[in-house]
Image (cartoon, rainbow, N blue to C red; front, side, top):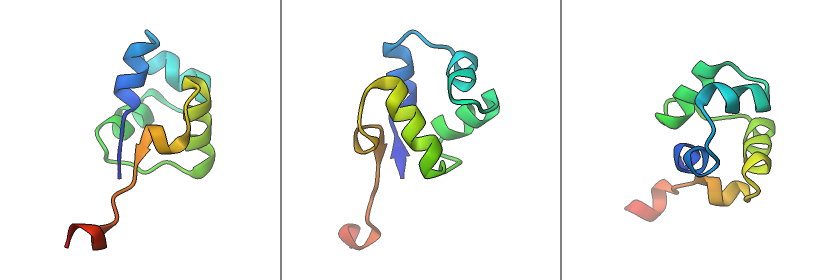
Length: 69
């Protein structure tokens, strides 16, 4: 799974710290999300999508491994 958090964060002129405060996580969580080193809970994914006024599917790109083969 990849995401577009950094892209949407830039569009909304938010720092990692500001976004973290809005969704009640540590800044490091946003860093790990942006680097695709952490998969968020559904609750966090929903909160992030809501901040940016997009759907979860617009923010997170789910890749089905079977589709790659």
